[in-house]
Image (cartoon, rainbow, N blue to C red):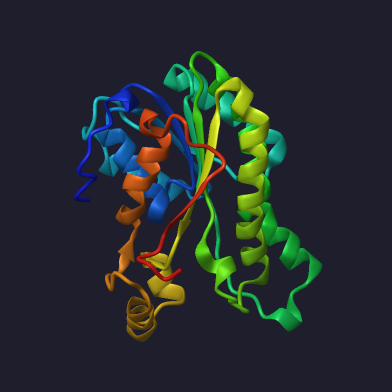
Length: 256
């Protein structure tokens, strides 16, 4: 990965917890924060891919990232997971809620179980991870939460009803958390990626034609990759955004 052009010295030795860090945007963030000298832990339910990220990143920074294999849908287990990460990292200053699944659903055949299962990964853990992390983030001089939403809910995409609902809900949750946690010094902001091309996306949904069609809609006609979300996330995690909260940043090349 080329990495951001900026070095955020305040991130050195800070405890960073990232969900969904085994692939895609999450893996790019694990690498980026590790290169910045942060102490990084990441959670993912894919034990094989998660361990592979750790092996790949060995030695790239002063602190080796810690992989925690877990299923975020197990809400009762989240406080212990956050506590384990905070203890291992020597504290926690940033939570990045990134884990998601953008599965396609046919409107006419979505069942209650389908709906609940989708929101169980795409929205519910964002709140309960934040709730569990808040006491650690508020310690000392405060911390930050970065929530990953998506522009999908703004594009009238009929094939992602539950996912779009979750991503819209993340914006509302970000605003509410900012109000609740601001007095304790915790900032909460959201990032809305556009069509980011990952290996999973190419395997399941994207073709050369759909990628080109989106490029033509963008003001900057260049394909977005996971690394394009690194700089904005580092900014929101760092002291550069110290007075910024309750905001949503769109990173889509200018579609919207």
